[in-house]
Image (cartoon, rainbow, N blue to C red; front, side, top):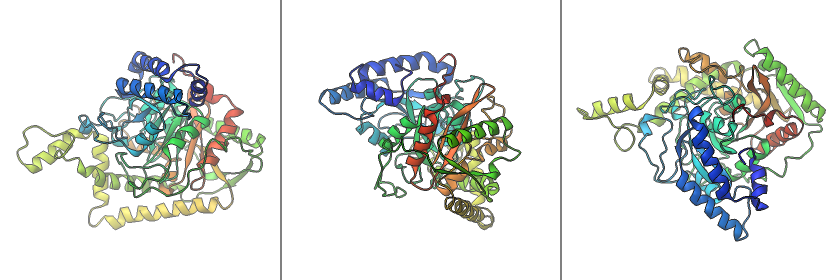
Length: 483
């Protein structure tokens, strides 16, 4: 059962080959047995899962249907879940139980999805390796000595190890797409505003976006269908109709114009990954796509702009965690200032503290214009580059990451080296565009992803291209040894 995709589970449940309760028990046992190797879960929700599975079986018995009805999933541990710990991978929120469900959680529950637990993540979603979690690093199932990518590494490792078929995740600068690439999954960052951020604990509000992680584009389409939609509780949510993402999966790629930016193939890209990307391009050409070289001239400025804007927003968002209303509180504070200092110093890890300090500096008097304002101007230039490119092509293709997954601890002493791994992904967040990573091969036994970017609200086009590619390749079917 654990090898089935979300689509196969939906068909199996519809054909009464097994019940949601039977499947849930199998996967919960598998998580208990195998997750100690991976550390991909922070919390298991066995009672809730079995309760939801029984309810889903009853709904099916009463004639209801739906691709997510009875399907097991997990949530990244920054989506609020009522009465269940929502920690953001931080000591600061280790004792926090959300009083309500995030919109994404509520929508998927209403569709009948079964929540198996909450997955591990970089603390407050800050990281590219899932090593900054207070609950310990997550291991990559393809090689337990390597990182799974971050910040959604727990969701990625759990799905890649076949502990469950799909999971929710979030992407601020590549945190869905990069873990997908490192663990041989398909991961989709939707257009900014397509998926509600209400109840999703913020890192950088103008960049964060929830999305699906699964083994196939078909599964991502199913999960995104349940997640997407306008939410009046979220002021950044876009009131745009949600199409049937599964309906367009089999559209022909004949004549599809694919742009390949020349800036993507610079000296920083591992030549073995470059070769795999070229192989992917050839495969899409066989399916009728037309390839065109394009330019994104301001891409080189994206990383410095991102690492001013994101920490600036983080320093503002995380100011609420002060030891007063919720979260970690230091013992026996001498006064209010001591309460603030020690609660935050004890509750936040080094990476979070580093980004708060950078962000506070960039927003301070005398430096706002020099750093934050200039970064926002670069952000506009990055967006303009994409708008010009999409006048010439339908989608943009390139590598998801410049290198395969690195060894645990390899970049801990050099945070900037880890930041540079986001070079291909952060531009989509700065511009608010949808992006997808799909499996494209292996380097030294470690997975490699190819990234697709599309114009606003064209998630269906990304899923269509990925699905057609996956019908003609088998990279996405490979399973890590031992899982």
